[in-house]
Length: 90
Image (cartoon, rainbow, N blue to C red; front, side, top):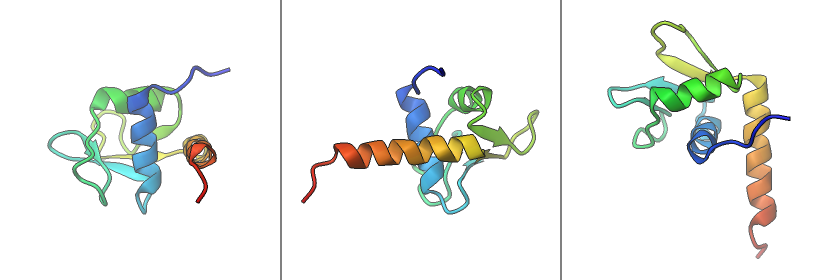
């Protein structure tokens, strides 16, 4: 069984899931989704997700884009479902 996601990993995963292309793009400050450029994640966080095979770089040596894998998409959807289950219903 895999270890639980760290809070920053979870935030990056959900940010990528919310992006239209399910990817985080390299910016001057780090990696951010196109739809929320103020949510920036460091290369270290991205490497953690890459090691877990939840995201893949377009180029491992000089990445410009980190895209969710099928496992990453499933993990993000599970996190969203978990959050919805915990939210009080109106």
